[in-house]
Image (tube, rainbow over all chains, first blue to last red; front, side, top):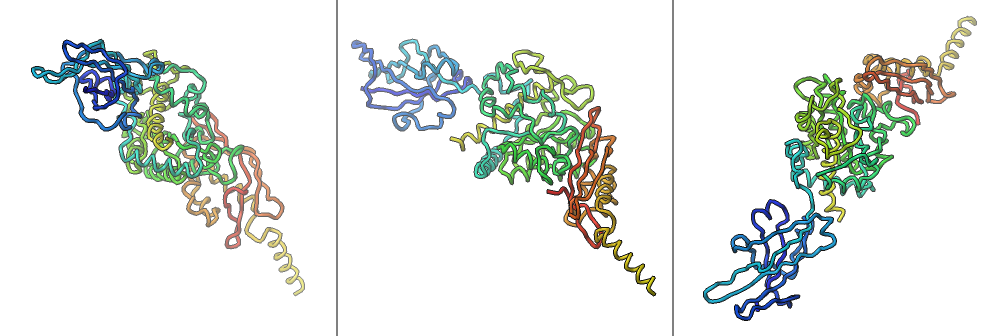
Length: 383
Length: 123
């Protein structure tokens, strides 16, 4: 008697909506229950499969190789598909699908759902209504190419060999981030992620780094100052130690968020030269550098520093956090009257429309996104 | 003749007391820091030790992003007969409306061609 084991492989809302694809594997396993209709010589089989998130999706299917891939819509299979959140599904981690398998000479084998089919899928909630921000696709803001993914892994592995803490990041920058409105709210629980609740994993993982200013932030910092020991905090840093070296020694991070450029005006060659030195230094130390573009045009209307940042990120194949693009969606580019610093909100409440009009709030959300992207890449190494 | 020999002896003794180099190391450091505040590339170039020549541009441009840069209560003193000059005071600058401070520290000096040179912070 034929049986079927069903494992659900369609894990995105889009693909489920279009075709509920299932993979059917012949098996000799006894069904857990049966409902036989003798007159129709049909058998009802109950098949069980695990609902999986995207991480487990790459694993081998249960009970052997896939024999056939069936598009349910092509076989007139219909029924309600119920999706539950990951939290709700945690209490019912298995999916039960009841399928009617029948075969007669007149009627070739088909698959039909004879009871109301309820698929309970554990969804890794990554892109539900959150693949854009203010109408901008996230992958235009967080730019990580396949080559960059490999580069990130390499740097991460190198950093782990040096003993870097995987769950720490550092900040390097000027007065734009020398503010309690840059990321600190996530360690103070002054936020509501709303539809972006999936980013909670980033907040949990990097707990403590958000609130930490570190010693690599100083008002007025420009790229020349990064390696000048005079700019280093004399209370914490050693003689002849630059602020970036000092920060690495003190915090021992795996990721460095680099937000420079607002104070580097009128000397594009210098900015390019120094930024590359910063990136080199970070990579040599096994720390993943993240270059961030800025909202202001302090160096002039040609936006040369942001263009340079993009070029350097591409040259080094490192993550680019292109906030400049997001700034286009914000009133006044998300800038205060001084045209440099970002507009502020005490609490990052992403359930409120006005939050998405605040420079710092959107800056912070995209910061979580770039950290999340890196976390997903390096998690393969962590596992 | 005796007077001439005595004069020569006094000159040599004075030179030795000055620290076997041109000028007072503490003065050299103060002069260097003031040149850094002012962004005076020529002065910085003459006072920078050869080991740090590659940092000339950095040393010259380190305060170009801030305004109203000035040394406040700067007082430097050589630590006994060592190659260290200890400084008190700070450099103050304005970034926007906000004051940014750079506390002074101890600095290393070296002799090159008979002259004292500034050579970074002292351990």
